[in-house]
Length: 235
Image 1 (cartoon, helix red, strand yellow):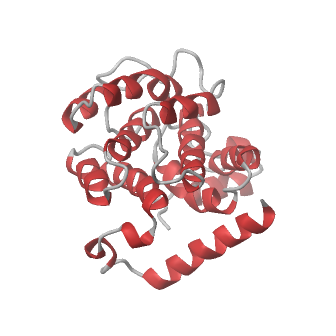
Image 2 (cartoon, rainbow, N blue to C red):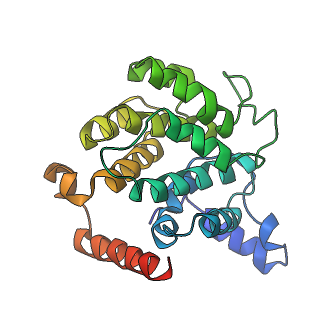
């Protein structure tokens, strides 16, 4: 559980004052909601339509910006799809393109314009065109970071985190460590890449050094298995 300081309290305060739930969140295009929505991705792994709907509603409680909503939906659906993808059949070029269709229509066409640096863009555009082009020519991580960005905005963190995973989908360390080493919103980007890789290779494929100091490791594992069991039952 990771709650940005004061965010939930602020939304709760606005709700208690009578503001509609879909207006109480922060209007910021952040990547962090994509991390917070992961338990739902496990629970609804067998029902993509319901997952997309509920992920959008869940994120809207704290983040009303279309880019934050699109990023969280993309990540949730990516995790769910990976859980249904055999280890030898992941097409790293078509995978982000498929996700771009999942979030089509959520973001304004011109996208969010960052405060500094890059021109306006969208999660969907980067997943549909820019990331596949980088993966197709096997661009190094540094080039991916420079092209996609890795700041707090979802149109940077989501594509870069996904790219770190898709470069080496079967290697947890090679997915997570580069995501964390390039500065920016390292915590969220590494969590995005790690969640995708963990869904792909399973707990047994994660090196022990990444798990040994994980707080409440057993409880987290049991919770994840319980959510997946519910998904299988409802699917």
